[in-house]
Every structure is written in C-alpha cells, then in structure tokens.
Length: 219
Image (cartoon, rainbow, N blue to C red):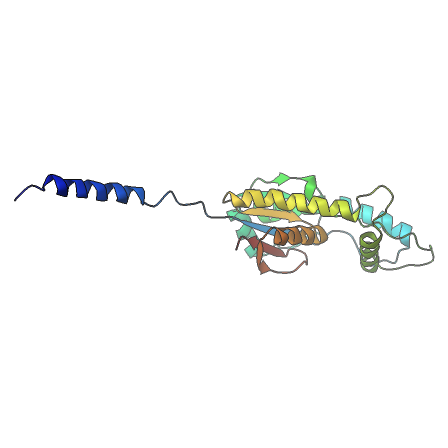
C-alpha cells in the first residue's frame, strides 16, 4: 500500500485540526428552577370578630405561631424538597415548621428576607368589628394604596425586598441549582412577579393556598 504523498498528509493534518477546532465545547450547565411554596395552615383561629386594634394584636400573634397540628404535607411537595439543591425558609415559625414537615430531616437555611409583608390595619372606629379575613384584605389594600404606616415596612420597601429576593434565588438557579423557598402568600406572589419581570416563566401554578407551590424556570 502506497504512503500518502506530502500533500495528502498535509490535507489529513489540516482536516484533523479543523475537526478539533469545531469539537463541541463543554456543555453549559442546565439551568435550575425556583419553587415558591406557601406554609401550612397556621395554628391561629380566624373564628373571631375584632376591631382594628384587636386585629393588630391578632396579627402579632399570627406572626409568632406555628402551623396547626395534624396536617399532612402533599407528597409532591416532599418530592420537590428531596430533589432541591437549596432550601430556604422564612424565619417565621409557620414557615420553619412547614419546611421541617416537607424536608424529612434534610437541612435548610432560614432567611428574614422572605418574611411576610406587614398587615397594619387602618385606624378605624373601635365599634367596627370584622373577621380576620376581612381585616386582612382591607389592611392589605390600605397598606398598598397609602404607603404610610407607623414605623413598619412600606409597600415600596416590600417591593424592593421582593426584587432583591428574586435576584438572589435567580442567581442560584442560573448556576444550575433547584431552589425551594418556603414563605408566605403575599410575599411569594411579589417575588414571583419580580421573577417574571426578570424573564422567568411560571410553569407550574397551584395558586396561593396553604401548602401550594409555584415553579419558575428560564424560558
């Protein structure tokens, strides 16, 4: 068998070099996800009628209580927790207890960045008595519209905090990590809105009820 001529050997070497140049680069790490979960049902009765000041005390109690005993976390949520690379709970007892319930002993972090936005009630007459559910709705609307409330976080400040939280979890997920946040209904909604503004897409939406999750990914 004849040896390749110098010209042929040069052509083969050049082809090898070109092939090497266009060889696939190291694969880009797959983007991760962000899952926002609302805590379980709190151990705080809503079967009461309160005036504004009583509702303020009721909300303070709500903030320091855990979840009602006897609740069973959804199996799907346990699966999400077991596969998550990063799990962060709000520092409120109801979020911490919820996270323990779904993690099965898996370690997680706690961060005050994810606490619920405040619900200061309007300073209305003492004779007006409403349920905590109605007070919560009215307090939230008043808080959003007036943005002026006796030394508590304002709506504008909460929006900045939600944007900061969204940037933090997005940075983790962009590194290929699946991030699970166990926090609160309204604040989770605002973090989700901030993620959407940053280009993320909600691909699973169970709403904002207790134990419900919303999952975000990059398109």
